[in-house]
Image 1 (tube, rainbow, N blue to C red):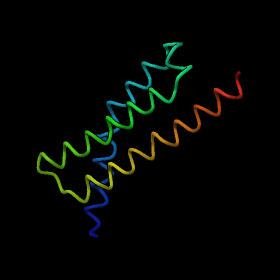
Image 2: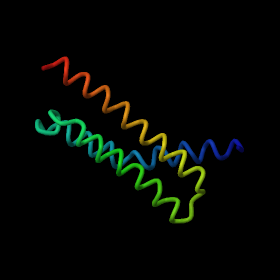
Image 3: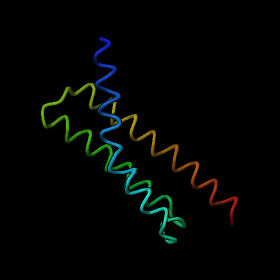
Length: 91
């Protein structure tokens, strides 16, 4: 792996999580979405993986897009775990 690929992976990662993070910020103001973080984080994680695979289909490096998809899925998975624990302690 070349050093330039690390930069590409980081760029892809930030690119694929941009739209889902905006959706999470908007959903933070909706009470029903706060009560059901599994739905919101599931949709956002799926969207991030879809965007990464879409970039691979558009001609991007498949390895970089796949690594970015995994990082995006992990980002939203750990965010979901944190939100669900916070919801459980608030109840």
